[in-house]
Image (cartoon, rainbow, N blue to C red; front, side, top):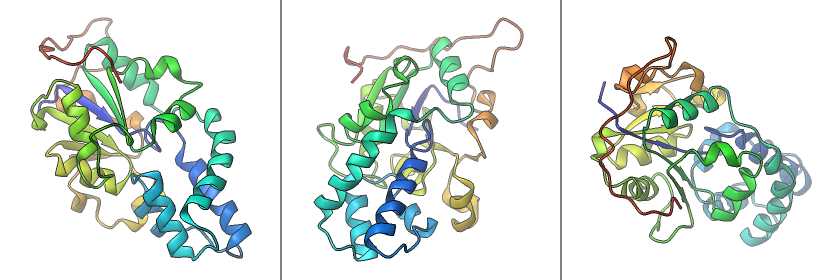
Length: 249
């Protein structure tokens, strides 16, 4: 396994249980405007990791909804605003993030969400997200393409001081995100929903360095990161010789 010095995390469905909200809202709109046709994982898998506009366009197109993309986004946004502030971190997330922060491992969030959506989703988890060195959002300047293009991971790499790509580890739940990280020449830990894994074929074919059921299964030492503290003492990352902007955003 590679020696990792920097970690980059997707957010939706990886750090926070937001993908459940996206599924619920989409299905409710399909119930109302498409005679209850089911929002299946083969369609959802293609949306995950993409920008909000791209995802909305694909839903309207695929299900032939009687509305424009903007109308769909407006309707879904109202429903999202009610539910996103209530989402919680997924299993194993807090333990790993607090551990890496305590050991001085530089970390960034790289989410396709807009800045306003990020703030909405994390409003009850400010303290946890304050542990990241940088937050990169899909509508930040310079990010022209959504996943599977590598733009957002390259932006996170730049914020972190341009460490070598082979020393960067990306955590992702979406196949589009895995491909984006590989396109950025980085290593990937893939933590897919069980439903996504069922339709995605052989997990090894996607190029991830590890495929896990949950963040709780991640073993830092496999990537030469500091081990979880079970003895009261452990090494910290010493090579934090990076130059990065002062503003973590």
